[in-house]
Amino acid sequence: MTTRSVSAQPSLSDPAMDELCQERVIHVEHVTAIRHALLQNAEAQRIATLFSVLSDPTRLQVLHALLIAPGGELCVCDLATGLGRDDTTISHQLRVLRQHKVVTMRKVGRVVYYRLVDNHIRQLLHMGIDHSNEPSEQEVC
Amino acid sequence: MTTRSVSAQPSLSDPAMDELCQERVIHVEHVTAIRHALLQNAEAQRIATLFSVLSDPTRLQVLHALLIAPGGELCVCDLATGLGRDDTTISHQLRVLRQHKVVTMRKVGRVVYYRLVDNHIRQLLHMGIDHSNEPSEQEVC
DNA sequence: ATGATACCTGCATGTCTGTACAGGTATGCG
DNA sequence: CGCATACCTGTACAGACATGCAGGTATCAT
Image (cartoon, rainbow over all chains, first blue to last red):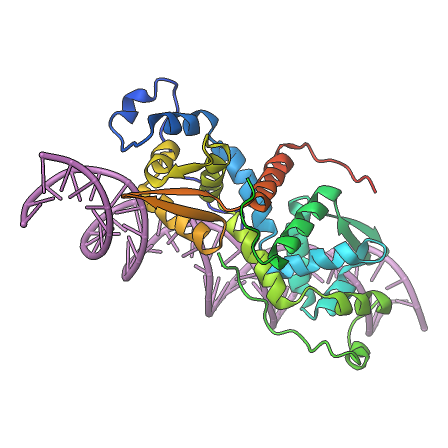
């Protein structure tokens, strides 16, 4: 889920042209362009982790439920029952969502209410949902 | 990658109130609300698959490279060299991206050029990148 | 205090998947 | 043709992960 880390990569020192001469290259300018603006491993890792949090059907159903919930929040019990899943499963997934700062919790007595953390997440969810409903928009630009 | 499928769920027949009486419920109206607007398994699966395609560091680096590529497209060779990865690895990942309609290919002689399929994908990528760069916006609504 | 409830966590298991090696196909060149 | 190149695919394996059972903690009611 936290996704595999990108393994060893060559140094990206500016005079990387040396090694380029020993590699398979068709358009040198493209390769150097990639290398200079390369998405760094750490960042790629972070983004991958974000998307991987959203890449599980159960978690998506939980998030969707929170997205459309009247008050914007739901307790574990109602979530589990509503989705027809074991409460431990929902609890496990909520922990994942919590650890990755996708949801926040609020405890009232023995009841714990969860809600989506911000609008950014809501947007991502909407985009995912929209995309999956589209036929497949053909290139514009 | 295609993500695990959501296992058995109870029937969501309208008179689901019967079984509700035998379940743990705190706010009945919330539970029924979830059940009536529940993200269906098939759709949850599709969305999860979309996000899972974006949840790998290597694929993200490939997509990012295509995102910033001068002409919007790159060949496998330059991609592999630019990212410093084995060409078979890049090829495997490009196939995944292709199968899930995230990139398209164009063959010229023995060179194959890949490009992002549409702006929807570009938006999703940008949102992921933006999100990972933010400190952690606090709730607005 | 006793029991019930709401939720959490440790663990085992079946399953999936990213990677690279080995080898295959197709195109271009001389 | 024969060779090199650009890319693809089959396979094996190590690592990751979602799920649910068993059991734990905390809060509430009687």
